[in-house]
Image 1 (cartoon, rainbow, N blue to C red):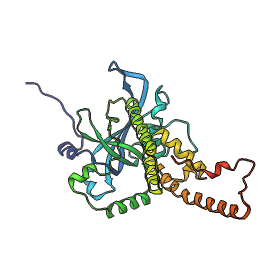
Image 2 (cartoon, helix red, strand yellow):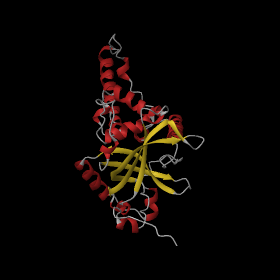
Image 3 (cartoon, helix red, strand yellow):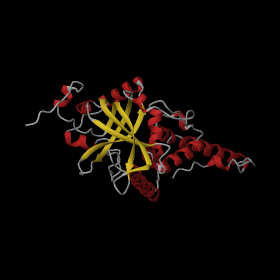
Image 4 (cartoon, rainbow, N blue to C red):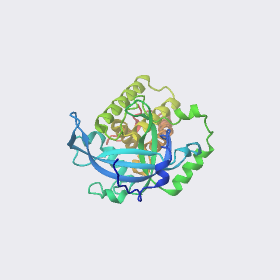
Length: 309
């Protein structure tokens, strides 16, 4: 019989003996960053590919916005984003941008380039939005769809709003706030190919956009619904959705940086329809007085139309 030397003095005995927390259901959570490590994603041959450098972030759930989700406290989730050395970073660079803004290393206008020390993000608290996903075995696992900076007042408002919502049954809770597209790819597994998964998510989002375009909208409610979907897709990182919202914001004379999320911008964009109606009324009055309304020679035509899909 062999004698084995051990030293578990630095281990948390409570954590070692308690059960593994269930993966969080969809919703908003306050999470603490346990560690951030630079790694290389595996290539097709199963070996680390040095052209695919990425940062692996491990987060632990601290609190839930919805009271019924407090049971997921202690659950761990993983988030990945590419470094500047990643040759395929362009397709999922938004994930790096979101994380660096959430942790304060980058801003929307300033500090758009530079370096950051992974050790300095340890123990930082950020807000995460979880969507439904699956692990490599096809079982349910929560995936991080979005990361946001932590603001105590905003967090309190989010919890107050969530507490006012009716508490769903266990069955309903599984489908609640499902931010995922139907593909639910294993985007953030520890050794997953994030670039490939995000590309697949993007393709699904584009298909969703095409379906919305084919259906069209005959009234203001349908149009608002399309904008809500566009906002959700943009918050999930869909480049086409972001570009469309930026174009709409420009036409409506709105600055995207004034809004915390793309969904908030999309909600505001649902209101310019009234502004357009006022312009039409003004034109009608002008026509009744002088026949045709006048247009500027410099190209005021652009102000007459809001390019809603």
